[in-house]
Length: 458
Image 1: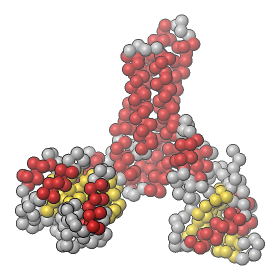
Image 2 (image 1 turned 180 degrees about the vertical axis):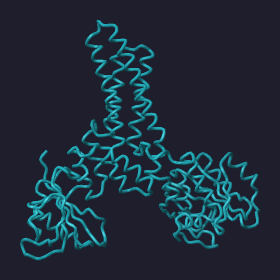
Image 3 (image 1 turned 45 degrees about the horizontal axis):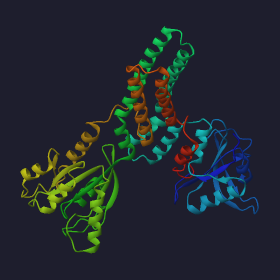
Image 4 (image 1 turned 180 degrees about the horizontal axis):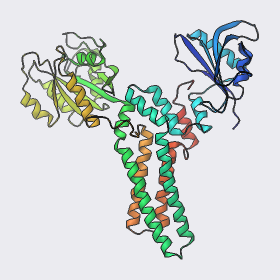
C-alpha cells in the first residue's frame, strides 16, 4: 500500500528537556536529510542516532541542535521508514522543527495515524492498537500491566485460536452439506460442533468473568463523596489524594462546587468527586452546587455517604440515605474520636446490609478499612493472577457478550435437532464478532472512529 509521509510532535505540549518530531513514510529519510546538517542519513545504519543541526534549506539558518534517530523499514513501529528528530523541549523549538518538516514534503499526521499505519501494515492488530491508548492513559501500575499484556498480543492469540476452532466447525458443516448421503458424516459434524462450541463458549465465559475487573482497572471507579456540610467530605478527599485539594473549615457550605481528582487506592484507580454538601440553602451559588451534587449520584459507580458521629442523625442525613438506596454505596461515620451522639441502630435500620466504616480523619483512623473494603467489593479480596488474560475494553466486552449469546443459541439449536446449516449461522456470527475484536472483520468506519480518539503523534 503506497502512502505519503506524515509528521507530528510525539511529546507532550509544554516545556521539557526534549521534544520529538516523528516522521513516517517512504520519504521520511529524504525529507529529514534535506534539513539535517551532519551525517548523510541515507548512508547510516538502521536504528542509529546521530548528532547534528536542523537547518532551513532556504536561509541556511540553524533552527536547533538535535539528535536524529533513523529507523528503516520493515522493523519499525509502522513498518515504514521512521525518523525521530530529538530537539530541545518547548513549544517554540518543536513547532519550528515540525513546520520546516511540513514545508519540505511531509503531511501533518491525523490523530492516531502512526498507530493506524502499524495496524494497516500488519504490525499489530486492532486490539493491540487500542492497548497503545490504554498504556498512555493508564493511571495505576496494574492498569498498565493489563494494557501491556494486551499489547503483547495475549488477547489476540486467544481470540485467533477461538476463531480457528470455529472455522474448523464451519468447514465440517460444509462437508456435511456437500455429502448428505453419509449418515456418519452428519453425526460426526453434530458432535464436533457441540464439542467445539462448548469449548469456545467456556473460554469466552472465562474472559467475561474477569471483564469487570479489567474494565475497572482501565476506566477506574467514579466515586462520589456525599453528605451534609461539615461532616468531613473534603478531609476525606485530601486524605486519599494526600494533598490539600479541597478547602477544609468549620464553616458549613465551604465547598460550593464539585472537586474531581484521580487517585490510586491499592492499585484501583478512583475518580473521586468531592460534592457540595447536600442541604437546603438560600445561597444561590451553593444551591447550584447542591443541585450538581444530586445529579452526580446518578452517574457514579460508587457513593461514599458520610455521617457525623458527633451529631444526631438529621432529616437531611435521612434524605441523603434515601436518595442512594437504589445505588451502590458505603456509609462512613466520621469523627469517632469525639463523643458519640449518632444512633447507630437507627443508621443500620436505614441502610439494610450496607457496610458501615467508622473513621476519624483527624486521627488517621479508618482509611485502611475503607481501602480494603474497596478491594473486597470490586475484586473479591484481590486481583486475579498476573498471567490472567483481562478484557478491559467496553467494545471488546460487548462483542464477547454477543458471541456468548450466539454460541448459546447454537447449542440450543443442537439440542432441538435443528438443521445443521441453520445452526451454522450462529457459529459464523460468533466468528465475525471475534474478528471485530482484532480487526479482521471490522468496518472501515469503525477503524477510523477508533483511531480518531488517539492523540497526535501516536
